Image: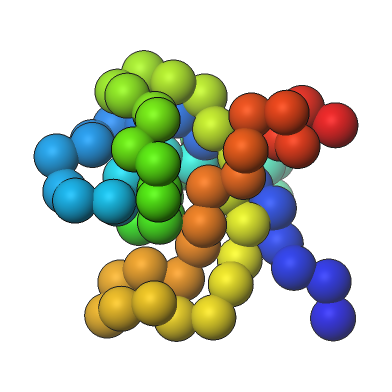
Length: 81
């Protein structure tokens, strides 16, 4: 099964080697036919501590690293491709 890759914005970098990424998704409401935005925060492993608040990053699903971390940050060059 392929690993999921999501794109979002860094909302916190206060933890050691961990960033919090807000991922927003849009969908059409089935009854109202209106575009709705929903967001979710993901804790991602950032080994190099290269990303700061406001940066757009891509994260990839991986094995659990801790209670909350199940994602790793992709390098900037790989994230664009």
